[in-house]
Each structure stands twice: as C-alpha cells, then as structure tokens.
Image 1 (cartoon, helix red, strand yellow):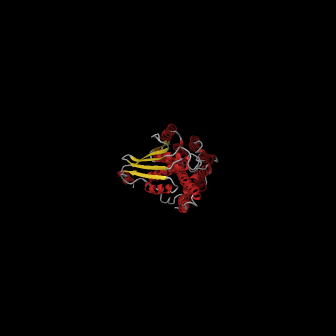
Image 2: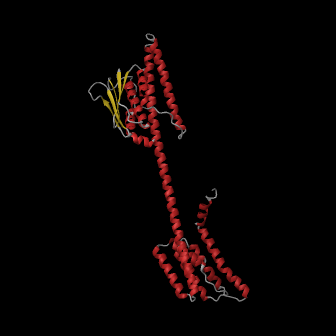
Image 3: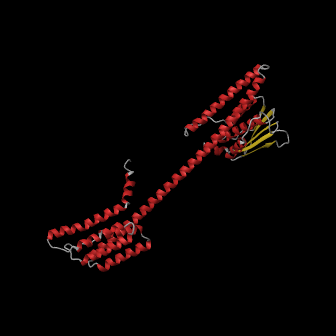
Length: 393
C-alpha cells in the first residue's frame, strides 16, 4: 500500500513538458537507428537529408500537448518526404505520426479530430501502393485514435473523481465546522445555565445565612450546607463540560432530564422560595434525550430568573404530558423585577427559546397571562410517536 502514492507522482512527471522532449528524442533515436545499421551493413552511402527527414518526423512531438494538430501536421509532412529521399533501408516513419495522432484524438475537438482522422485514412488508402501496407496503416491509425480517446476518457474520469473528492472534503469540513459551532453554542448555553443557576442560589443562600445566624442557627447551617452542595454540583457539571472541550470525542457524561426536575425544585426551595411542582399525565414512550435536557434547562432557567429578578415568595412548575408533546409552565407571584437584584445579560430567555426551537417547539416569556402579579415562562416541546423513538433507538 505504501507504493500507491508513487502513481500520482509518476503521472505528474509524465505531464511535464520535459517528458515530451524526452519522448521526441527517444522516437528520433528509434527511427534513426535502423538507418545507421542498414548503412553500415550494406556499405552503400545515402544522403544526409535522410537523417533530417527522419529526425524531423519525430521532433515535432515536443508540441504534442501545446499544439497537437501542428505536431501531427509536421510529423506527417516529414514522413511524406521520406519517399522522396533515396535511403538505404526504406521504412515507414510511423512512430511520430501515430503518437501525434494519439494526442489529437485525446485533446482536439470532435470536429477537428474526426476530420483529421478521416483525411489520414483517406490519404493512406490513396497514396500507399500495397494493400497490405495500406491495411496495416489504417489499423495503426485506428489503434492510435482509439487509445487517444481512451486516454481522454480516463483523464476526464480522473478529473471528475478528483473534483468529487474535493467537493466531498469541503462538505465534510463545512459539516464539521457547523457541528463545532453547534457544540460550542450548546456548551455555552449549558455553562450559562449551570453558572447562572448555581451562583444565583449561592448568593441568595449566602445573603440569608448571616441574617439568621444568631436567631436561627439551624437554618443558617442549612443555608451554608446548601451553598456547599450547590457549589459541588456546579463544579461537577462544569468538569463534565470541560472534559468535552478537552476530548471532543469523549463521553459527555449523564445529562439532566425531566426526572431530575423534582430535585431541582427542592434545590431552589432551599433559598426560601416556596416551589410547587405538579405533573399531569405520563409520557407515551421514552423521552428523547435532547428533549429531556431541554425541558430541564428551561425549567432551571425559569426558576433561576425567579430567584434573581422577581419579588416572589412562591413559584409553581407545571408539566403537562399531552399527545402532541410536553407543555411546560413556570410562573411566580412576584413582580417583573426585584428579587435578589442580580444583573442579567438577557441570555437566559434567549437560551430558553433556542432550546425549545432545537426540539422543534417554541417558548414565550412575559407577565402572567391571567393578569396576576408575576412572570411566567411557557414552552411546548413536541415529542415523536413511541414507534419512531423505538426505530431510532
């Protein structure tokens, strides 16, 4: 297998203009050598013009790539002059003509190459005296022409395959770039969700701890314990994300799903917010991992916003399993701003919409639709039919 790369290098070397020069020299030597041997054996002198004609029927091959028609015409003219010179060992000078005809058949337009091929065959039949010689010449012309067309077809096929390989490589690179962009966006959303949620809870718990440190030591101790637990959980999730960045093909580790939402509600409740969690119905089949993660992150971001921005004492999370998918509704009883007074870059609500859209769903966020004080987030995540999930699995 290691020798395979030598073929492309050999082909490139044969396509070099210097290869045409070498070919012309070799053909000239091949056509001149019989004359030299015949002269030395017979002892009969012959005119130096014979050498000129013989070499002249070969050297035009240096033009066989740049001007194949000109090369063929020159080789043909010098070959025709052969019969006008008295040589010791008369022989047809066909090598140069046949190679030049091969070049014309391989590169010239259909009209030009067919016209030249027909003219050569007709001239051969009319000018050659011996039927055997004429037949042999026609056979050689046909063979040279056929080889030229085969060479052109092989080159066209090779060019097409090379272009196709280049196109596939570009498509592969584009696909990998898009996949990398999607992965970076996913990791950025996950890091935002994890950090924003965890840090918000830690800040609220840290602010509440000193307030009740003297009056309610047990509550203060629970707040500090919750801070430690939240920090450890955030650190564990960040480690998994960073592992993916270091090893793109590595395991992502377990991702949160809808089954982890009760634990999430309990974690947020540790800040003092009354979180109610309600589920109606059951999923029709296995929930796709992407939809499960999206549902978890949407609820997580919605609750994080309640802790960060809403003057709320209570939040409610409702999940409704419908035939068409999962409905998520998170609302609070506070105002649109306030809460812990933490800054916001607006990325959370954007991330909610992006996660819902990635699953083919939609999400909205704004003041509560029932007119009561508070903020709400609604999302709908369509789920495939159970048989489709089984087929994909």
